[in-house]
Amino acid sequence: MIIPKAERLHSEELKEIEDIAKEFECSILEIHGRNRCVYAILGDENHAVMFKRIAGLSYIRKVDMIESSYKLMDRRSGLSDHIVRMGETEVGKDAPFIIGGPCTIDPSNPELYVETAHALKEAGVDALRGGVWKPRTNPYSYQGDENALDIILRAREETGLPIDVEVMDADQLKLALEAKVDVLQVGTRNALNYSLLKQIGRESAETNSAVLLKRGRHMASINEFISAAEYLVAEGNPDILLCPRGTTPPLDGYRNHPDESITPLLKNRTWAPVIVDPSHSVGHADYVLACSLAAIAYGADGLCIESHIDPRRGIGDDPKQAITPEKMKELIQACRSAFPSRYKAI
Ligand code: PEP
Ligand code: MN
Image (cartoon, rainbow, N blue to C red; front, top):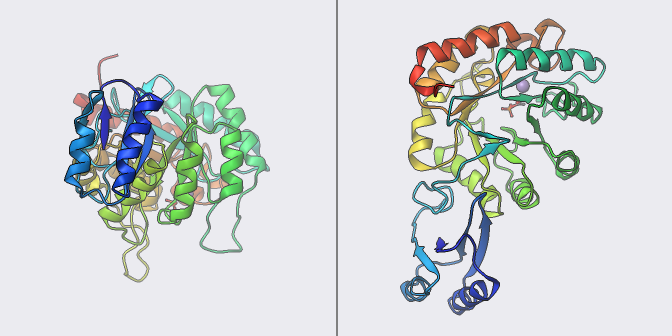
């Protein structure tokens, strides 16, 4: 990882470094942070001479040799002070960042979504979620509908809150980027789909869209989880939110095993904010509060919670998992009372 003295290398400087790297069969990748650029060395980095030559250039502040399989996500990397911003908000800095909204937007009843969005804003959430396209275990279950995108865009317009939408393929990504979706969600099923991760990282690199990456549900190891995020950053988008969302252990009938306790491990190894999803972690509205409190206790920077104004009328996971906006308000207050030090006085 190369960190220049200035915010960004001039093209002649970059060319000089690329020429050195080429001699050692390496190449250079420019990564745009919000405030400055850092440069990753791709290829076999174990060339002390190459490092010394690059480190010796007058316009270079430092060259890190991080021997980690995720050298950009690593806490010791040049991105360690990177802050993910959502509008004016620095995610997780002043208070846990709360994303809320239904599992699935019902396109046949737009008012239900829009009313939920207003009620959630009132309850104190920082961003809205809502499934437009849905990854369903059963191929005969509702699969989503493009028309739902307009509904969540309307909710963003009316509430002013950023929106989080899952994308599962290139066509959906294109529509989400055209709509300037603030958070592109990569769900647990695609969490290890490396071609999709690369494409999302590449195509969102020059946009303001962050990526919320869920952990692979079938017990993806910490290393696998962080390496999946590395794919996104290595293609140029450092605005990553890591999302533990529970796993499915190999126990018959046991689908939701919470994993918020990996938060300290993730924060120890990486610099990225951790947003825990208590809804899919526990799979039932009754346990969402306890899981949310546990997540904040473990140091999570935020929560992504399924919520619906009338869960019984919801589709997808909502009837069993969604909490009401009133419960969301209580949950936000419960987090504030239990962990006052996590809230800056405002
Ligand atoms: C969702 O957020 O509704 C969803 C399908 O999530 P996951 O990928 O974690 O199952
Ligand atoms: Mn869901």
